[in-house]
Length: 258
Image (tube, rainbow, N blue to C red):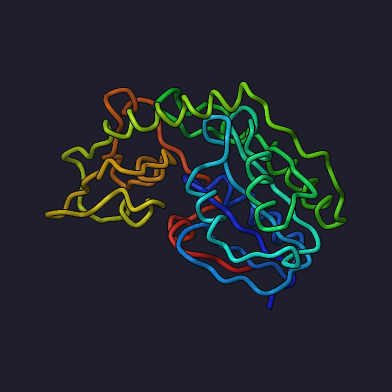
């Protein structure tokens, strides 16, 4: 049994790469994808949650996974979070901490790391991705050192502006997911269906069908498609594709261990 564990949620690999970086520096660390079911050990020295910020908050799919995770107040000596983002962490640390309190746990440490934004529904992939990732890697090294030492930070409180934006943003997600589609370039490989963390894509007659039910707007299907066949409306076709160079699609489908 590993003495440390990190749970990650990721669409295009930023949070996965961050989790792997931290796990490597901690040593003796298990990394678990936040999808499906998982039964943790009774106790860990350090427990971490690495996830992106969506619409100024935590991804609903990640919170759903955490709700079903069998944890107790004795599950970990030290609990940390790292939020990867395009701009800021919003209310994600607060929301995560609130969910943990339902398990008699609480965050001891929370940090935010700017990485490459993937939400091409609103903006293009930036030209300076290499620079952004170099900066993020250096920051993650410092964060991992602080986590190793079990340093503590102040955990952000709820920001009502973020709360309002989160509600509006998730309504926007429901509208935009109805515009997701696959073009004739699709080869029917099924990768998108396997990647979807909420089972919102079904393969029918060799083509992906978007079920329009619980889309997380993680953009995994769009960015990992080997044929660039998936778009949202018309605006995403010319905005580039991205996934973290240190992440692989299979790691977002299951779990990986370090």
